[in-house]
Length: 131
Image 1 (cartoon, one colour):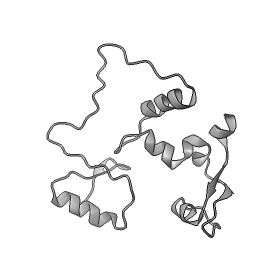
Image 2: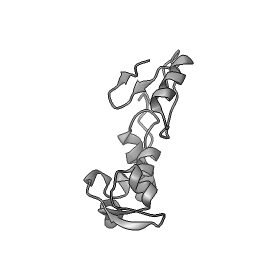
Image 3: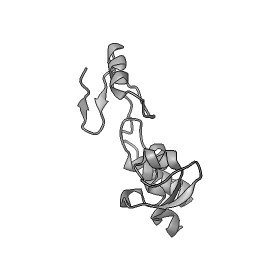
Image 4: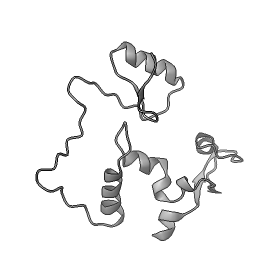
């Protein structure tokens, strides 16, 4: 279990290596690659796990913790205490679109969504994307 959570390596082919900015991986064969970036170490540093344990527009330590408890520890979290507001839905009057996959032209995607009345925010900066 310790290695699963702390391993400084992963298995990549050329396409994944290019996506994650890892140099010197050529070809379609998966091979063991040591990761320099400590944020990518272990299971909790992998994109699929980070995506699965977050909301579409923001990270969630609560979801991630619940996933770790349930899937890795085998002890699902207890429900929140009575009276705690757990509604994290989109506010009334605001439409939300979740783009989980990179687009070839993100600027064009933003313009198309804005033209349809969506509010597009830069999740990294918390600001609205320019029209």
